[in-house]
Each structure stands twice: as structure tokens, then as C-alpha cells.
Image 1 (cartoon, rainbow, N blue to C red):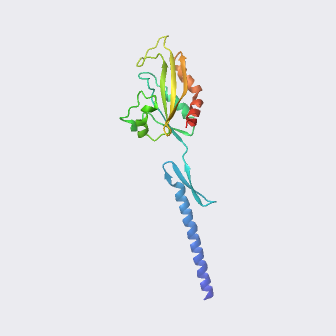
Image 2 (spheres, rainbow, N blue to C red; image 1 turned 45 degrees about the vertical axis):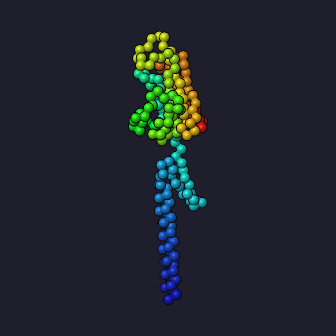
Image 3 (cartoon, helix red, strand yellow; image 1 turned 135 degrees about the horizontal axis):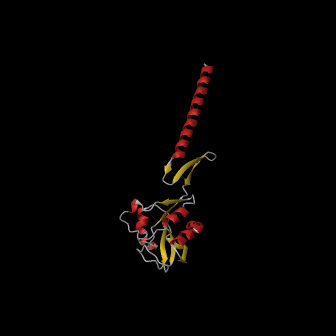
Length: 194
């Protein structure tokens, strides 16, 4: 009788122990794949605590040039330079969520609230032409003076700053070249604007 009792006791302990381990493994697996928009819950097996790991990608939209109607828009070049940083997600423009929202001509934070209300983002990059470029003109003679300027808005703090810019350029391609040479400066300005 004692042997049968000991056998049943050992069997009960083994079955309870393996069930607890299996339940813990299942809980760990579920917690590792639980996604909550930008958070991933991960169990630290050493301390047996759950930690939230924040998705650290910064979301940026580059608006169309505020005064570039009818002109080449250098925004795609800016997007290309910014996207070289793997910690930044470019929100595509135009974005279907912006239907009915005024985004043309925007080059200051006071006009950005309708955009901010429609999109989940961290930064807005605004652009404008400098120089004597006539809006809507597609022909340029030797008297055209080219230039551009970018402005970054941190939508959380509503702080904005002029970033890369250049004026007194001879042709449109000089704008593209300057953006490509100064893309890292633009990225640094985005990362450092709090």
C-alpha cells in the first residue's frame, strides 16, 4: 500500500510539474508575440518580469513643396536621403488619410494641425523654393536664381526648425546635389529636434 501511495504521489508531482512548465512556456510564447501598436511585450526569463519594448522607428512625412506648383518637387530626393536612416519610417505622400485636408502651401506649424489630426507621425518636413522662381512656370532663362529651404516640425512638442537650405544656385539640379550632400545634416536635425 505504501508503494502504491508513493507511486501515485510521484506521478501526481510529475504531472503537476510538467503542466506548470508547459503553461509557463505557452504564456511566454503568447507574451512574446503580443503586439500593441508600437509595443512588444517580452518576458525577461532571469527576473520573470514582463518588459515593454517600444518600436523606436520615427515616423516622418515630407509634404509637397509649399510654393512649387507646376515645378519639379524635390521632396522625393529628401525622402530618399531620410530613408537611408533605418530608424525612420517615411509616411508616403500623398496619403489617402489627407483627403479633404489642406496641405498645399504649408510651410509653418500653424497650418499643420489638420495634418497632425489625420496621421500618426512624429515629424513633418516642409519645403519651399527660394530665389526668383515664378510659380507655375516651366521655362527658365539664364536669369533664374534657384534655391530651397527645409523646415522640420516635431509634432509632439510643436517645436520647428529650419534645417538644410541653399540659395543663389544656377539650376534645379544644384538643389538635388545639395540635398544629397547634406542628407545626414537633415537626419541629425530630425533626431535632435525635441
